[in-house]
Image 1 (cartoon, rainbow, N blue to C red):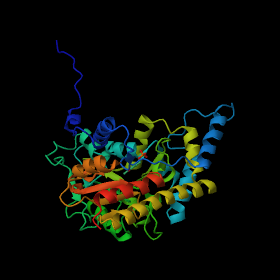
Image 2 (tube, helix red, strand yellow):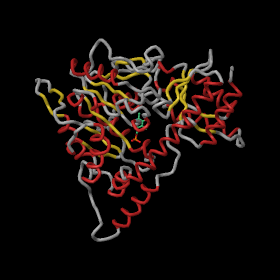
Image 3 (cartoon, rainbow, N blue to C red):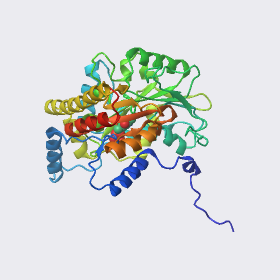
Image 4 (tube, rainbow, N blue to C red):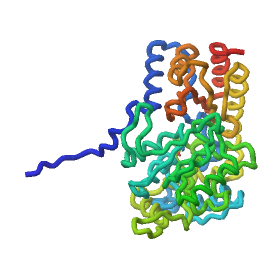
Length: 416
Ligand SMILES: *Cc1c(COP(=O)(O)O)cnc(C)c1O
């Protein structure tokens, strides 16, 4: 008799042990256990710190009250999101920038982390995937789990994935490569480098995608942090992007929803992939099928909270939160720049990407910063081998902590 066996998905064993943030947590815990009195300032994990906007809190309370009444109770919601939220998204995130989308092209979800990890499911396992290096680890790991890669090499790069280095030379915003790909993940404003794509850069990517029949997966989680109104906030501001790009947005960073959970993915009608026999299939229909099978809509209360972000008070209050973080970013740039550091990003993103001091690796700098200044950041090499020699600081913290971190780091490592 054949013995039954719950064989595991062995692709998971290709994943590198000690994923970045657990490793940071482990080192910080070890330090605080040994130094219980140290006042550690965390500029590491990209989580927001400001409390929810009053307009959002009021919407949550109202919706919770409604749920306790016979008339206001809501069970399972419509799969793609409630009309009130879809309409607000279409109006405020798109129509104001001259983009016409249909409600059926928007899929409300509980997070862009999930969406950017799950989207690969609707593509074939033989698809060639392109990512930038450094990169948001979810794009890579989700493709590893799905079996689109071989093993990782010593530098942490997986066989079968195409990596495009984001370097000082290309302003951390690489041009499309000479060779094509089937799927390409882009993130602008970028986590971790803080770089933002210009209109010309986006046009080159869209032209490349259309010429190569590539699907772009455009992660715009940080669009609200763009300060220059001339810079595109959506890939659909570029002519032709409807035919080649999926866009993802989240309420996490723009409105402090990291613990509330609401995001959305846009898949325009007319954007297609191909079958082995060459037939064109709508990606919107595939994602719709997937969403309906594996997801049961974002809670009514949370969608009300998200819609409140677009109310006049919500827009005002959340843009004040963004301005608060951007002032932190400006101080980090100015203070650490004056101390002699070479810094990038932080102008249209809540992340500062800094060069580590001469001769110190990313993890070496992490350890020294922690032990000598009690400040926690994120080693650039944790986002990819091209991130070695760099370090990410986040602007998500209180003003006092940011000022104190600047003072401590300047004292310990300042060269000017
Ligand atoms: C924070 C972040 C997101 C948002 O994730 P949620 O699951 O919506 O909280 C998406 N992409 C990137 C690159 C991020 O840094």
